Length: 190
Image 1 (cartoon, one colour):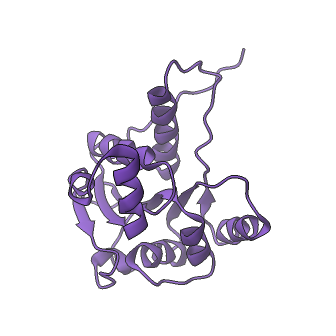
Image 2: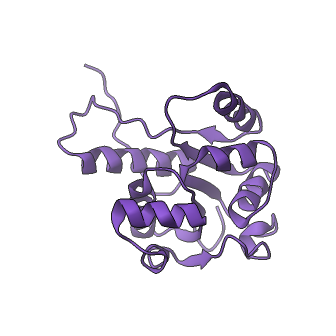
């Protein structure tokens, strides 16, 4: 972890599931993590469609926000000691770019940095069903050290609402990334 606190890069790409990003940014802030946000244009479009939020409203949830075209931003370099990165949600286009090292925007460059520096990268991929290209791209990212985390809900804790499903998934993601204080509900058996 960075001496100044946990540094988390958050990417939002153009897939359904913007609520995961919104909740993740809010929960990361509550846990004291420093967040660095980059949203693709399609991510902005989906967030507006699904949540009614514009770019500025989402950026206000982060400590630092960058344009996807700003490839000179600090998160584009391995010398910036980010502790982890999550792309929530992660489109198949973004997955493919990460899998093939196409650092064509700041989001995919930051993900590439996480892989090359052997830091935690988690992609909350959103698509169904998967085709062979999707599966091969997920395999490639996994082989490079990334974590593929489709936001599949767990029901064994008997959630009473969609909010509870989203919050439990977000907590699992933050715990897996190593954010201090994040604690997903543990399964203690029947």
